[in-house]
Image (tube, rainbow, N blue to C red; front, side, top):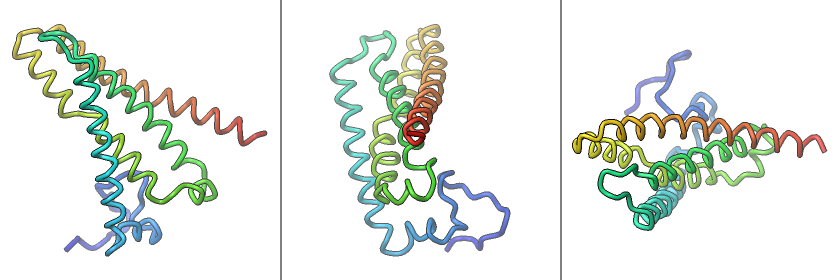
Length: 168
């Protein structure tokens, strides 16, 4: 049983869902959660498969910089930036045109399964175990900077394109 809602109390939830708004809370209430969970599961399976395929196609040599996982995370973050602008930032009218399962399937499932913190952390740990501290630190810092920069840049460019298109 969940604790009672208290006004002004922050919730540990996805920041684009406000559980105080009945329509948003209803998205996962009762039997309505099953299509959402199915969409997340299907997207997650596809995203994880794509990430795995990239790591098989471009494996990192022992002790080398893990470029495949690095680029998967940067690309995934860029796509998350595009997606969040398209499905979350353009008012009620735009949200009505987007299928309600688009964000769970694409954002949480596909891109959540595609990007990977666990493989990033494992790669970092393996590099440290091999005493390749410089490569490990470059990988750790580069991934964070690349991912944050990618989501910011992709969201900014998408916002500009959508704003320009709406002004026409």
